[in-house]
Amino acid sequence: MIRLHSTQLQFLFALLALTNIIQAAEDFYKLLGISRSASQKEIKKAYRSKSLEFHPDKNKAEGAAEKFAEIAYAYEVLTDEDKKQIYDRHGEEGLKQHEQRQGQGGAGHGGFEDIFSHFGFGGFGGGNRRQREQSTPNVDIPLRVTLKQLYLGDIIEVDYVRQTLCVNWQECMRANQECQGPGVKVRMQQIAPGFVQQVQQRDERCVAAGKMWRANCRECPNGQTQSEKIDLTIDIAKGMYPGETITFEGVADERPGMNAGDLNFVIVQERDEVFHRDGDHLYVTMEIPLVDSLTGFKHEFTHLDGHKFTVNVEGVTECDHVMRVTGKGMPRRGGRGYGDLYITFDVDFPDSLTERQRESIRTILTGGGSDEL
Image (cartoon, rainbow, N blue to C red; front, side, top):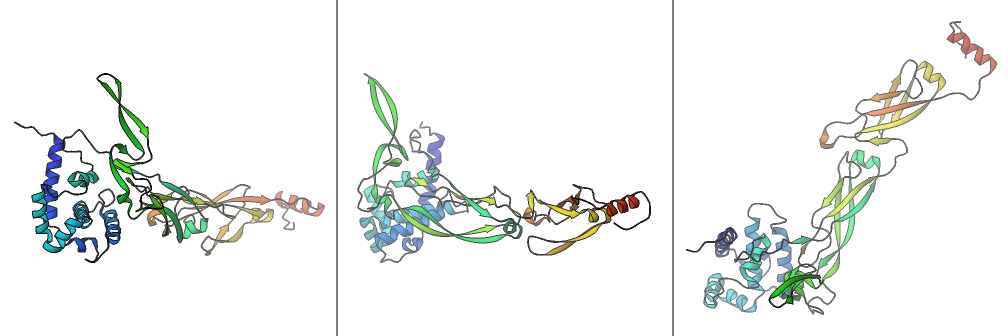
């Protein structure tokens, strides 16, 4: 009796599912969004765009994995001159008959093993498990904004320059089983008769498991990557906090054999001349003359968005007294109202008084009845 490992069963079920996908696949040219007269360069460009759109690691929508497998198979056929000619003449049915005669079972550039590596399945034997794709480093960029922008919300358009893969980068890779992943090479070294050990070393030519970059490749004369300027729209939500990030997934630099990392814009709040912020609340210090601190007063404030409001203070105001004005702070996230404004009063005492003023004040405060100051 033959017993199959769980990994082998997983692979078999996925293999049967992929066979059904291929049989039901739509027209390959339509699938990639190209014409039948498209050049190899156009086919590769279309494949790169479509595969990024439906890659299972990026697209979690239902049916995305199946769509990705169809796209991979269409690209495999259309970039193989023999298969492309058969497909153009006899359609998919003729292509399947040809593959059956060749004993390939529908495989091509790496076959099903190569396609299933995108889903994280191991090899059929279960012992050669492929490494999960790594990502290039995330990029953090400080985004300096004013308190007013955080109060109102804002839209900022920026240009960002990143490194993207050469269009024909896949043509510049060759098989090398010593490559275990990006920049990692493992070779076998005999340390004694009958004893062998694995030695891991750094090799930047390794771009993926089993794949090595070909130096001086004509398909990519300027190297693995090229500069690309992209336009980004940054949406600053009302009430965002300093230190929060606005993330664009998969927009960092690209490298062969790796997913692109994320681009993060980190909110940095600039100092405001009037208000100080702490969470959802705003704080302001107001200097008032001594006479206002004793008799009460009204003061008109201008808020961050330009609207005006009046604060009424009655009675005696002590130095460093704090007054709370409800709902005049920062917008709370999710539209849940506003924080509060806290006003600290700083009483400005006169530098000196005349003798007459001193007597008047003494008389008033001791109940003499005089109102003269």
